[in-house]
Image (cartoon, rainbow, N blue to C red; front, side):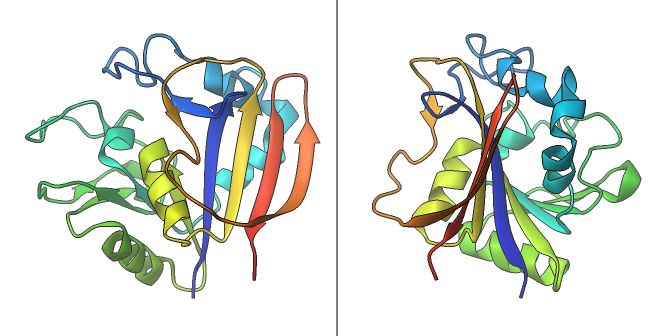
Length: 198
């Protein structure tokens, strides 16, 4: 059975996305790109953590992680990442409206799931085999999987600023127990790893 991991970059106050997401501001105008400068501008300092994010053999994400549109699908939209997304594996996108799968370069195929988090995880687990399923985000999707007790390992990448508003990890999750596994700090981010209690 596939192991389920999750990675999320968050501010010090656990905000993983700001308000008013749009095509111009994927994480909201107040957050901008600040949550991810450690991945792009200082990637050598976090090479192992970045590599771990992309070792999964299947992914699950929410609709707003896939794109900014609401309501009916904009069928011309194929994700934030251009023609060759970084996943190189099947990605199961949660939503309430059906859409045909979208095959991209490099082995990424986006499949759209309307049956909820359990169906998406079951399909991702089947695709992953004995590999790893990553809950790729966004915050609402991660919180749903945490609340359901379906995440084996949580990796938060904490960036040293506060936002003060937005979507926060653990909001509405309830009482869960996680065991600390590791912590590592660079000048730009602190990487924290927890595992679910056995």
